[in-house]
Each structure stands twice: as structure tokens, then as C-alpha cells.
Length: 565
Image 1 (cartoon, rainbow, N blue to C red):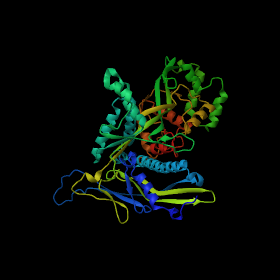
Image 2 (image 1 turned 135 degrees about the horizontal axis):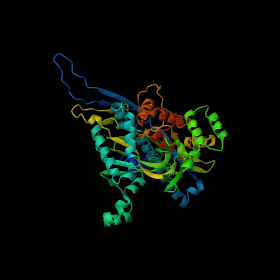
Image 3 (image 1 turned 60 degrees about the horizontal axis):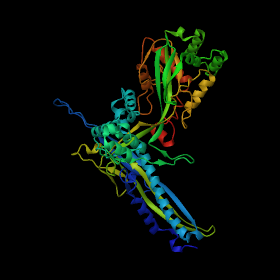
Image 4 (image 1 turned 90 degrees about the horizontal axis):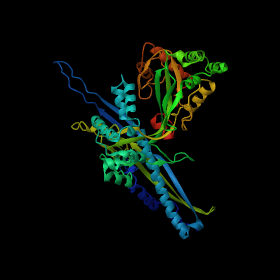
């Protein structure tokens, strides 16, 4: 069987049918509520837009015959391109004419439509998480002197917040509304989050127990987490996409994160320490003998010499303490010292949320156009098929611009209108991302395995820490003895602390000087410099910088499935 020649090649009638199935789809909130479809007649051209920011200020007193203070304004230029993508379907000649073949063809058309919509949904996910954060711009501009502390404090306050506070999402949503209002944005109307977060919000003991909620609690437990609206926001559940061949589909709003904990105490009178073991979900004990044996193997002098050789002579203070613990033979000989236990690689799956004001006039659009359905008939191989190609790109225009945004009919660039009589319209900030607000599974790093301070133990820790593509499986606890009593405040950055560091201006990606200065402020006591030296040596010996040149931030790590430390 061969198809008529008139149907071969580009077929506008079939193209329009497939276009309609895609563009008219209402079952995807990503291309309707958040970044709706916008057709472009000439998608090959560069998409450009300018963002003007008019800063507001307070008037000041001006003497006669003097100049008034000038208000500042800024312009930012952005650009992007649509991407040409395509899919094809094939069907054998003989099978095509059967009843099953016609049904198969019908299902293949649906497969094309569903695959293209799924691709566009993924592009919307990526556009949202990679869009510039206005929160970062605010910190860079107004919190330079205390940037590090402000960023760390905000992250710690919201980390795993849903499990810590029953009303956590209520607080986050209202805080986001307040932030957007202060930025000059509109009140958000959607929240994109993992379906598992919806489950945690509704199916908690407090909300489903009959004793606290009455019949409504039992009904919620029976009906399940059917969340469509929450505090006035449309709930858009993020999707899982098959991004790597051979691996399970992955939700971009769910990622692996490593954080750390440290514990300090006097060695005097120490016999054992009780700590929480998340592997067994129980409180377990570590003896003081086990701790000091992990610091140095009393039966092997060669182990210490081998470690010194492998470190190239680094870590002198730490090795001296190991030697002291060996010759002391018992913790009681170190009564005037402080014991420091660190868990630097506690790893969990964490869930994030994106809150914003969706729509073409407030956030952005999914640009698409120049679609083509080509029909071919391969008589040699007995195959008939179709190829669908199209241009598409989801773009967030208005994370930092106003709601009066239009596509120029002549050059197809995005340009911004401003109105001097409506000062808030040119300050729309309609997108806010909050990472790691809820736990979603334990991966490793919070058991009671002690790192042994010998060549094999150190290398085992380094290898496990540097492998960010898999769950952490290395030793969890690092033991140190600080020579003198010192108070370590939380949060405590673990870094290379040096008095000779060259000052570096704080930015969103690199704030070396800020980290060092902040870490120094978190150590208090008459011998804080010695403690800083010990922690710096540990940082170098264990290579805790973790190849900082390739460490990914939250956006990049969640996109490629790596762990963020």
C-alpha cells in the first residue's frame, strides 16, 4: 500500500490537527496557568527584552541655589532563542490497513501529542527554576555587609520546615506574599510543588486525627490528599521526567542535599556519648574508647607515618593530637581538652516550592511556532510515517519587569511599557523559589560509623564525599580533640580559614572573604585561633572543598541529579 502523492511531504491539514491537539490542551497547568502558550510567526529570530528598573527614594531637604538628588534607574537586557525539536512515528504498510493498524495509528498520534506536551512541561519546569531570583538581587544590593549571615540564616530557618512546624507552608506562603508586595509585585496565584509535599501537608496526624479534627479528620484520612487550592493559591503538582536512560523518572523539585551537624563537650569524665542514629531510627551509644581508637590506631605506628606521607606533610596539629591520645592511653589524660564530633555529610531528599503570579502578562510564556508535519512513504522498507517538527522555548520574562510586556510585531523582541503615573507597575517581582522546605527520605551520613584517622580511613571518606551522583555511603562522624576550650556557634562554616586571605567582594556565587570572616565570628574563646587552625587542617586533609570548581548550586544540581553539599 502506498499513500497518494498529494499527501506526501509537508501536510498543512495534518499539521493543523496536531497543533490544535497540543495548543488546546487544558490538562497541563504548566502551559495554561504558569507560562501559557504564545504563538510566534517567526521563531528563528532572537527574542530580546529590556527591563527598566526605576528606584524609589525619599526626598531630601535642598538649600536654595543647589541641585536636588537625582533618582537612579537601571536597564537590563536579556535575550534567548527558541529551540527546534521534533518526533517521528512509523507504521508498516500491511499493518496500516488492518483494524488494529488504524487503532495503532490513532494511538501514535496521541503519543506524539503527549510527548510534545511533556517536553514543553519540562521546559516550563526548567524556565522556572533557572529564572533569576530577585531575592538574590536584593541581598546583593542591600545586604553586602552581612550577606553570608543573612543567606545562611534564611536557609536554616526554612530547611525541613514542614516537618518542624505544622503551619510551615502557611508561614512560607504569607511570607512570600509579603515579600512580593514589598518588591512591588502582585499577589501570587500558584504554587508549584511535589505531590509528596501535598501529601505531607494534608495527611499528618494533627490534621487527620478524630480527637483534634472530629469527623473532618477521618474524612480527610479516607479521601486522601486532594489539594487543588491552598491559602488562595492554585496547587500545581510538579511532574517526574525520564531524564536519564535506564533510571527512574525524576522530579526536579525533589533533590538530594547534604548538610552537617557538630557536637562539642568536655572530655573530663567522658565514658560514652548517646547520639541519634537515623539508620536504625534510635538513640545509640558510642564509647569514649571507640572515639579515641578512631583517632589513632594504638597498634600501628606505620599507619601514622603512611598518613603523613600521603598528606604531603599537612595536618601537623591534628597528627600531634593523635599522637598525644596514643601516649595518653586514656581519655582521662585529656581532661582539659574539648571533644568535637562532626557529621558533615547528612544526606536527605528534600522538596522545594515555586510560588508566583502566572500568566503571559505577569510572568512569561511558552513561545512556539513554525510547526511542520511531513509525511513520507518508504517503499523499499515497506514503512509509512510522519515527522513533526516545531520551535519552542519557555521563557520567564517578568521575574524582574512590569506587567505591561508585549511582543513587537515588527522585530519580535519583547519590549516594556512604563507609566509614570503608576509607579508600582514597573517593579513587578512575580516569582519566588524556596528550596528544601520538607524532608522526603533519608539517604545516609547520620549513622554512628566513625572515620578512622589513617590513610585508608581518610581516603574512604574523601571518595564517598566526592561522589555526588549517588547516595552517601561513607563514614558519618569525624572526631577531633581541640587543644583548648572553645565555644563554636551555629551555623559554623567549614572552610579554609586564613588571616592572609585576599578580600573578595561578596557576590551570589563567590564570597570567599565573607565565609572566612563569618567563620571566625562563630568561634569564641581565648584560643579560637587554634581551633580555626585545626578546622582548616581538617578541611584540607579531608579535601572538604570537594572540587569547588565543579560543585553545583541548587538549580544545576537538581537539573542533573547530583547532590548539593
